[in-house]
Amino acid sequence: MTQYTASNRRRVTWRLAAFCLLLLLAAGGCSKTSPEAAPEASSAAAQTDMAYTDDDGFYYDDDDDYLNDTFTPVIADPIEPWNRFWFTFNDYAYEYALRPLHKGYSVVVPKFARTGISNFFHNLGAPVRIVNNLLQGKGRAAGAELSSFLLNSTAGLGGLMDVTRKERLAVVKDDEDGGQTLGVWGMGEGFYIVWPLLGPSNARDTLGMGIDYFVSPMTYIIDDWEISLGAGAFAVFNEFDEILGTYDTMKDMAVEPYTSVRDAYTQFRRSRIDK
Amino acid sequence: MKSIKIAQVPGALLLGLMLMCAPALAAEKSPARQTLENTLNQVIAVLGKPEFKDPAKNAPLMAEVKEQIYGICDFQEFSRRTLGAYWRSFTPDQQSNFIDVFGSLLCETYKSKLLEYDGQQINFVSEIPFENSNRLVIRTTIPDGDKQIPVDYRMIEKNGVWKVYDMIIENNISLVQNYLGQFQEILSKNKPDYLIDLVGEKAAAAKAKNDAVHSK
Image (cartoon, rainbow over all chains, first blue to last red; front, side, top):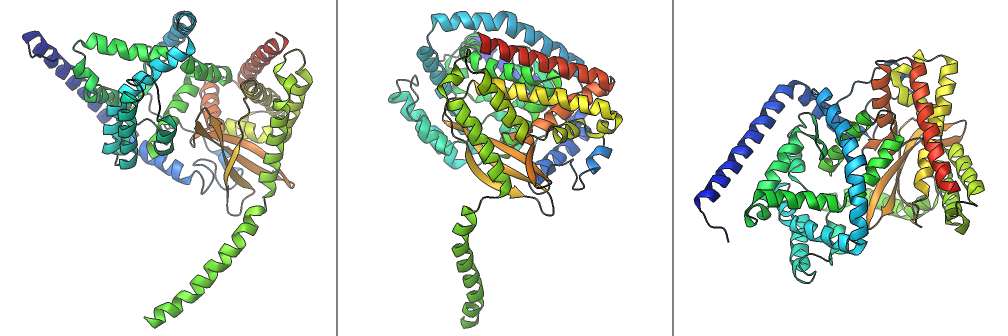
């Protein structure tokens, strides 16, 4: 399908350039924050190790000791004003654009169709998950993803039906991505980033996303990167009601939503990497 | 060869003894787990009643749930831990006001999630005691679709009564720790009364939202 015409070659070059830029940005970001990032990573590890041997990291054995200590956040957030801007922007975008849009969408497209679409895109993501499982040494999970991919693509009508869900979930603990692979390899988070519309991330997970994009066969099968990114955006939008559910709960509970989401995202990713 | 075999005898005996005792130990539930299990079962029993889904009739049931939550949660301990070092900068009045509003916020947000309950059963996974401590962790999972979400309860014993003082979701997201980060952020720039008002407003909003759902 792919023919190496001049315009095509230009596109590939452009992709490579974008990828290198992303790498540079992430590397630059990481090296800048490495003094904070190193102790941060080790304290995070200590915290999870200690979580059940001695309560948690900063509540000491003596019941009153923790009252004397000032809690210092272990999450690097050097671009906080920028992040807060996009956090607020996203909130407006979710409330006034995406929520009503999705409401209309869910009237036109019934639940079973949305589940089918969701299954289809999840199945397309299997190659990326297989590669990431292998890179993390999770052979069994990689095997389960592979057989699930083959079965769903055929018996599951090209992935519209998830016929292997139960069996796969028994082996595969969660969807592995590039950010987790880099984390397992020992790369620190770098610093916290809120992306427009995409929401919370960090330098490492952003780099991971970039790598996943280039690992995915879809990137090469679909010629136009606009279409392949658009498809990705549609896949997210299709199940946006689920994201909104979590978002609403957090917003209802939080007194300072920005900090709450930042901490929860970071802790959630750390626990995924430990798995 | 023989000496090795003889050396293994005490080990084997010990192992056999442990295996014999294991079922007996497993059957005996710790007081903490018993307390937690009782409360969760009682809440689930209320949620299972058909009138719970009926907004016109469920007000007394909601009150019952609220009573259970206040019975099992140590909101003073929750408050102290979420304020960390700032706890001591609060006057006793501010402390008790804070416990009131924060307890109410936690209770209302918990209640708002209960309407989503759909017959799931809570699984007890394990119990991790701390040495020389009046605290322990009870690990449970709750099914969400076909996945199991891990929820851990941190419990503390005071005067022979076990109460919950923190919950950990997905093995790593502690409720107390998440609020601690938020409150540190707010208190680094504002006075205690500002935080108390803010939490109070949030709790009132959560309550109004819950009541609106129930009177619909």
